[in-house]
Amino acid sequence: MSQLSPSAVFAQISEAVPTSCHENIVVIGSLAAGYHYFHDDGSMGVRTKDVDCVLEPFQQAVNAGKDTVRALLDAGWKRRMIGDHIELGDESTPEDELPAVRLYPPDIDPEEEGAWFIEFLTVPENEDSPAKKWTRLPLDEGHFGIPSFRFLSIAAYEPINAEGLGIRYARPEMMALANLLEHPEIKDAPMKGPFAGRTIKRSNKDLGRVLAIAVLSGLDDFSGWLPQWKKALQACFPASWKELSSRAGNGLQELLDSGEDLEEAHHTCANGLLSSRAVTVEQLGIAGQRLQVDVIEPMGEWAEGGD
Image (cartoon, rainbow, N blue to C red):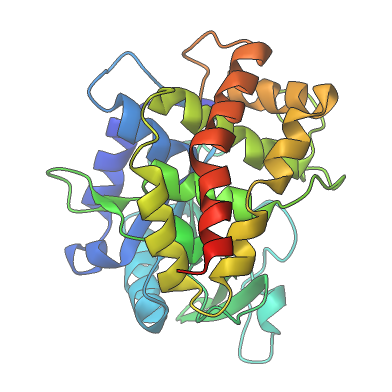
């Protein structure tokens, strides 16, 4: 994984993406969190290889995606030819067999150690959309696919403007909530590839990011999270916010109760978002317990109250 400067990558994305599409793109993931916490400190970096960009709203995602990908390809960005379904499709190709949009910047050699790429996703059409769905993105060269995941609408809720760049990024607390909702339990399914040399459960990696965000926010800086979470849940999941609120912390508590899973989460943090900080497993657990007490438990009580 590359040690990336969030400010430098944000600037490159802002310059490469058509201005008309800026309002349809939200950067999420480690780079978004790194930009939020580190953009004023040039010495701080984030270890990641992919920069996830969410296209929203859903009704404009395809047109914005077509314009953006066209501009990047014309500017010399190169496709990442790794994984399943790498050949471009056509009208007859099922949507779930289309290649994802993954592009390297023109000044990066994809063969080099630590090369990073941009990847496009989209928010789901509505709260009843399946856990994962592909949307067709047709270009002259062929058809791409853009995946959506159920809780990306939460991650992209009321994003923050990157000052002076014209693009937006996800609020750290919204990314934390999206990951909590995605993992109400620890599943054994591993990540597709090793993370810093180890096989890691996907649940532990994503819930580890929740803990990393909690650490970076500071143990006394959760006061604004609960009202934001309430508003986002009711806006994005008007029919199911109560059920989602009541189980949001289950997976995290399971992680905190398991020394093995917590250690895996610590490994991803130490080699990812918290690579510039020395944080122990114990400190990570303390941050998680504070998050449970200060935000997650009150949210469950709010859901039971029904208002």
